[in-house]
Length: 433
Image 1: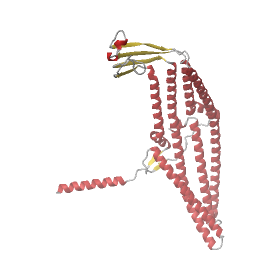
Image 2: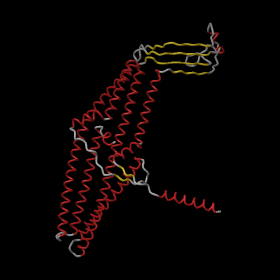
Image 3: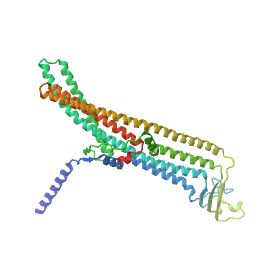
Image 4: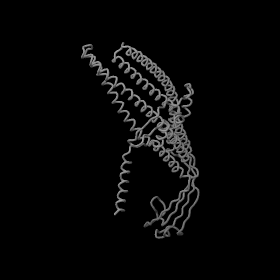
């Protein structure tokens, strides 16, 4: 009886401990920018899909290359013959057949294999492009979530100041020192702050949900971000940025790979005007029930044929049309490369100018914030001396909060512009991973 009671108590203790452990919240994930980027790369479904496309391209190379490898086929069947023995397709009816073929020289097939290898290279480049996109998107989300959280802190402080202004204005209206319109104006300002808080809270929830999904975190796991900025990099002239972009841009590399693939197909299609050479072989087992002895001088059950097959095109209208088509595709691919290179240069120069513009915007926002802080300090001194009202002091605090919000927005705009430039020049992976 004592043993049963002891077992029961142990079981109850274990169940209680399990329930308590299950109710404990997930520990907060404290992430630096590089840790977030690493988790995003590890859990990205887009990168996994791009890698699968690379595998498909590898298998396509194997399929088209198989014509240059030994191919052996076998089969068996039985056919009733009345008259001359002939199977569908013009061959002889066999009880068992073993066929062999292997291409030795086929310019068109060789061109397709080389084009497939270039497209495999293109798919590998696409994996890098998708990875860079994931890195840039993760970094942008990281910076935006950090900005939204700081904005919420400022807005909640502004809510307290706005409520103090509403209360002070109401007292002055009641005392007859202010018109009722001033109370409405103060209430409107407070309502706008509440509206902005609600918008920022919604955006924060949305960003956190997206972040957890892309980083592979638990659905309700809290996220703590370390305040970080983009690593500082040496300022480069526009020509150097364009040169780096042309060397690293995945889109341009993909276009160049597609151009080489088109050129290989064109070369192979032109080569199809020349003979093709291949090995062929055949072993068959025949049955005299198909009347072979009636139409041939000698019947032999086991038969072997082996040799070299040479096909010589004399007039092939389809080949000439295919050459024209391949030439047009090669011209289009070359034009795409030139267009991509030109567009890339223009885009990088424009993005470099954009970075310079938003840096100046942030400098302006910083100075406006500094001025608001100094003005708030003056109002605070006047309030301490009894020469300023509480409403004026709280309004100065609201003005400072607004400048803080503008400064945060300007900082995020600069980070977005710098990320776009890093991605365009192919540096985002080197700097953030």
